[in-house]
Image (cartoon, rainbow, N blue to C red):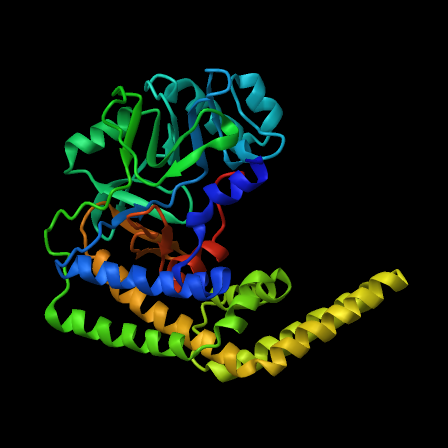
Amino acid sequence: MPKRNLARICTSNNEHLEDQVLNRGAAGAQEAINFLHSLRNMLTGHIEKPINVTTKWDGAPAVFCGINPDNGKFFVGTKGIFNKDAKLNYTEKDIDKNHPSEGLNAKLKTCLFYLSKLGITGILQGELMFTKGDVVTKAIEGIKYITFTPNTITYAIPLDQTQLVERIHKAQLGIVFHTSYHGSSMSNLKANYTVDLGRLKHTKDVWFRDASLVDQSGTVSFTAEESQSLAVVLAKATAIFQGLNAKILNQIALSDTFRSPIKIFNNSKVRAGEPINNTTEHTNELIRWINTKLTKDIGDAKQPDTKRKRTQEKTEVLGFLRSHAAELKMIFDLQNQLVYAKMMIVNKLQTVQGTHKFYKTADGYAVAGDEGFVAVDHIGNAVKLVDRLSFSHQNFTATKNWTK
């Protein structure tokens, strides 16, 4: 399998559940609805087929580490390990060559030295939560915590959790592993979105855990009223899906020319923190935005052939979107229902009490939830469950405190 395809496969769980409608057409829409039904069943105690839910930790960077099956050597790296010119780091010299930026360089060197002592036999992917010096003691709303802010969310552990606090203070780094990879070579690795860390060696220098959702309160289950409310939303989603023209839905999914600008425009609303309330106006605004963008692209073209091709593309894209505006509205209606259902589930899962989480604000801190969750079905399909108007908006607009 070419590495460029492997990279796409290994990052497939980065897609939001509602975006599967655009990514995979009718099959993706049905898969999203099935996921939500399975999660509803799980949260009402009716588990027909196993579904695994893990917490998304807001770490940075994503770290890959383990044994390269091609040469038996331990390495660390970022997502660049899947590039055509794979950036696998076996030594500090490799890190200097592949990752010269100061912040990432230092963190990867720490990972190379200490993660090599855990006895990893395959390949693991995790979110780096901190390295020595990132952990700070501070008071938030009158309570003293040790804190670390790897990306957008500040994680805070009360000082009265003495055992955990001591472990983190002594550690040179902290990491949450969430994916394992296995294969006879780097070119045919297969991802598994659950990990077994039972065989890893424990050392005071590395604080690690997996991303499994742990219900410490025992209360994360739907009431009869909540379950019925979710059933109503899912019924609406199913009705919209059944009324959609599957051929049009699949045309969008199969054409990057159609799909890509729609996703870019939708993401612009996420960046702005704007929900899509009026789907008719959203459709009209989308078409106007694409018209403006493609007109500019034509004007920017220097060569006659390029100008002609872009003019032809504009005619094709706008002709398709305008003639299928009603279907586009229904697609956005379907996505909205999927988001409503998803948020019912996310809000329930967020009630699990664990590490305290905050967003940094101009005048202090605001309470945050988890970054989100990943749901994996019984055959290994994975989707992301995130409150995009909260976390994703924060993530798009926040200033990062590490160098990529």
